[in-house]
Amino acid sequence: MYLAGSAIVHAPSLLPNGFMISLRGMASYDGITAGGGADLVLDFKTLRWYGGLTGEIGLNPSSIFRSQRKLNPFKGLGISAGPIFNMYSVSDLSGAGMTATLPIESMHLLPSAWLPRGAWGLLSQMTKNNLNGRGYFTSFSVSSSGPVVWEVGKGDVFSWTTTKSSEFVPIVEGFQEFGQRVADLMNRVSLSGPRDALESIVNEIGP
Image 1 (spheres, rainbow, N blue to C red):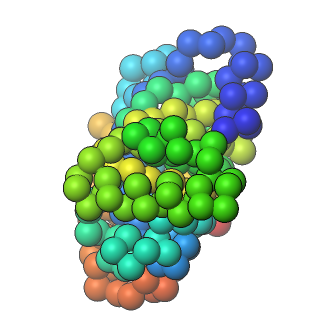
Image 2 (cartoon, rainbow, N blue to C red; image 1 turned 180 degrees about the vertical axis):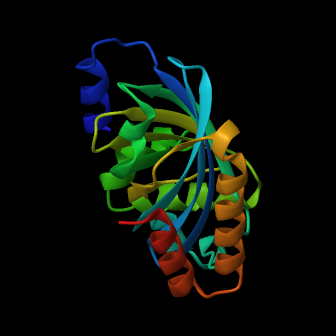
């Protein structure tokens, strides 16, 4: 979050340069989470839509609870959206990055998470919210090239992940190719186990 705030503050303009819609499927178990999905980006400079693929791996503390473990990344796909800051071109979003995701409804419990019973109380509340279909999350993503994405989505999620994004292609010209890549990736992941699914995502995104 500090890196995201610093990048926005030091950007030439505090106004957003684009808008992102993200679709994610994540598998989580014993505190570890991994997965990926597709991103749609509207570049405010060109007013054109672009599409790319993103993979993630990191920590999800709530998955220490059995009810929060999820090995099928397509069970409960998540969608989020928000503005992009400090982006000169869509290509800046490609490559490595980091994402911090915080639970909005349970955020008031975060300061007490450092206390002996505070962390357990936070995770327990998040589990209850997820089981009851309540809560929203906010995420802050920082790309290695500088752009910052601030998104909001449905669900009580608390995680830190490292990300890797592919090149973004224009949706109009590359719609058929992009759609086929997403369909092929989803088919491979749905027919494989968690480890093979993650390998498929990494291979599709590229080096």
